[in-house]
Image (cartoon, rainbow, N blue to C red):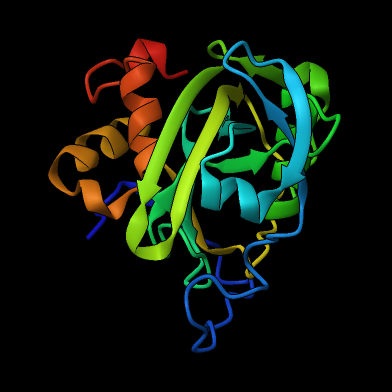
Length: 212
């Protein structure tokens, strides 16, 4: 599977074995969360429940977060088996839907806090690209995920990480170059949106200058 030059979770961190819960269990995905609905210009035109957005392909907003330490290592997370979409796949540091009235940066800060116990200031969040459309259709599980997504980064983080083990089954600090190289050999080990962001941002195993 994933063979990184990585710093594993410290042994003092409690990493409970996940109970045998079917993917998509109610604890992992809040289908009743209200989201802003947007048009192709990223203008808010209404609001809808997350579950309906994901079932009917209704365009909504999301943010993808990359968390780096001072040494340039990147935090990646393995998604919980409870997740309906891409359970147990490796993912970027955090991914969050924007709640009604929330900005991309506010959602990024909230996602880091909720998923990883990481607290950051809004001013420390760097925008990596402009909002853009992405769509992931998985008809066998009834998912049509249509998002206006933006990528952001937090660099130089040296604080604690306390994962929410309902959302996340494992986290690692890794050399980003190993991630991009491993994606080429084992793409199915990673979420589609993580692979897509790596491609969109032009990150390759040899392109170290763009990573940190």
